[in-house]
Image (spheres, rainbow, N blue to C red):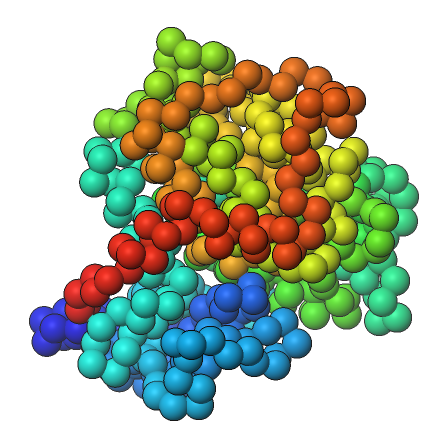
Length: 420
């Protein structure tokens, strides 16, 4: 799966990691990836096997590319069904001892074919290629994904009471939230906010921005940690787009900012609200492709129970400064480091690698075309007769995705990215 040198380098890195992890009481390492249904899949090895796994990978059946949310499988013309095998190769740069699961460490994994070629269906590889396409233009992106979830008791009822953002529910689950905070911090993450959200039993955490692939990795790690802490407290956890029908759902809002040579292009520019031309073109590309991007960022049937007006879900294809009903919200913040854009219409059912990679592809299409942003929406779009609703169902979003020009570009660019 790699050249001899890179295999040797990974093996050496793993040997050093084994010594350090063993001293910390780690017995095994979990390798994680996210399938096309947005489900996190894992395999693990005992700590003494980490060097071999880093060098040669761990077997992983390719049919998980066709797995659905109920663990059934679909088929495609390109599917080999039960035939073949892939190799999971852990990214040891993200190797993290799990604070809420003593004795275990975690690393995200890339998927390769048996001959060492990157698997074209590897979602993490897709996000990396999209990031590299941005970098070839002399640009970089910082990204972060808000993570919302609902905790429930053993009977399935929301495990808090009191109003949204209310102190009551914070007090009720104070020990639980403290352990979430401690675990995330112990794992090297910078927590920016942790608070109750609107829906019953709902909480949200935000962590510091990272590169696109790193932000998706962090989303995996945060969800893994929340699940583990919840289990330790006897709580069930749900990241589903909607836990209680009619209530505010679990979003997966994607924040991103475009940078060139250390300058945030969403601040200090000549355009509206300080946008530089490159940032305006990039965001215009994202806005233009939002109907198609929903197939990646809102990929479940239940996603469209969440994506309704007046639920802060961004149900309309429009943009606006601090407009929480617009699908694309511009945030100026308190300075150059804070300005960013938020894609509000995505939810927690999304595969974060596909979501962020798709947004980068759409943004680059807008950048390459010099696409201008349309007029800003300065009020609640639900009150405007001219407001354009985003797709209201998964079939509508899928149809838009099939017709998307950036999607076709991404497919043609998959090609043979070479061995690693």
